[in-house]
Length: 505
Length: 83
Image 1 (tube, chains in turn red, green):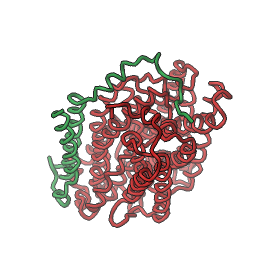
Image 2 (cartoon, helix red, strand yellow):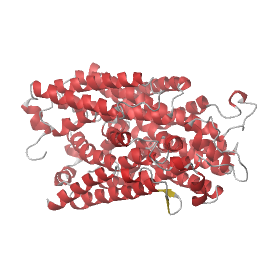
Image 3 (cartoon, helix red, strand yellow):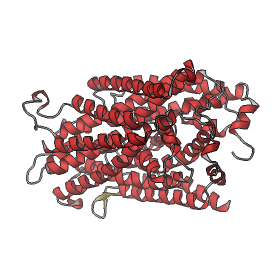
Image 4 (cartoon, helix red, strand yellow):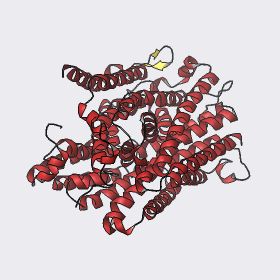
């Protein structure tokens, strides 16, 4: 019961934060969608970092380390340390400058302008939102399984059908409602403030869980001795080719619509400097404790007994929750659970705002005209669509049994394979409208075919020729983009002058 | 220019050093608790942060400093997409 009370108090705090940020809300779409481009370096970093670290980073990483060993850190986290910052520098910073100069609030506005095409926006919208749904699902599933693991046996009467634990669907519903409430109040400003607070919470709580679990297991050395030696190495768990091709996946941050929007909130380009350096270190601080906990749990037993902490049939998603639930005191267990939920909600909020912004600006306003809507109506349109997407995701979560890590990888693979589009749009003058269309369609088709071949993510070890499926999607995007662009008419001089001022790129 | 090339070269070299095939089957525990490959990638992450610090400190593109000097009053109307 104690962990649940702590979690409820934490959720209450977030709602209060939403009320406070509402006092700063100016009522304009610019303020709701990009916080009037006013964020400083610390808030920008915390909101971007908090957004990239979700259930995938805490629940997913612990589960994946439990499943395939400590190579999990190298295959995705350390690669992200280099590649995420490269994306912020090569793409985020450039798009921020273009967004500030030309007034963009969404990726699609940029692509429409760069490729002189309204239709490209209508093609990209369902793909970008569709790929975001699995990402939202990752959050909702992660929240549900963690709280379920921590509260196992706590409510034997109320929740008899789930063994006394809070049903994941109930957690998902409550989390969605809390995030909706604070972003409804203040839009992206609320999300940024909440992210800053929540990022601090989940980093501290992750460390707290790590220290307490290692202490319970007899210290760092004793805990690592308990881990399965087979999971301390990459050999036999992750092939070299798989490890290498995983490096493409972090490119997804260059195409995440919510990160694009987060970058636009920056007041100055100088704010990116802090983010470039702090991001790799923060990834390490967040991931290493979870990776080690997952590794320890491959062999750890409850102190003084021979009973394994993690039951044989446990889902990898549940490893962190079960470990915390069995090894920590109820208060600590509640704090750590609040930390995990913080990581999840700090992504959900930006994602919610992003889908609302895209729907309002890229579809409704674009189709019907800006003058038909008041500022208030535009904000309400965004809120309505956000609620719709949250409902759809929630319904999916009721039936979705997939592993958080695998689902995340499929989502990231889709965005990563569209990275060549944004990179070429910024750096290659010869990229054409037809090339962009061909690249988006080819990538979407290859993504879907491979996702279907993996039994819609159920096959967690699905590879193509020993490589991650993202390689084929990425290749499809690059090849079609280059070939079709070279075969079709170059962009107009007006567009080239607008996006490639002399001697700048 | 030389500094910039050196920093970019360092970051590219890091990318290749990410593939620590020489540690793939090394089960030893560094400091008694960190699996060897994990310890290596922690060090590698710090090196990546150092590389980005060098870029920020010594090779930041000057055009962005100019962009910052633009006042908010000169910003265009929202949503610049043209048809």
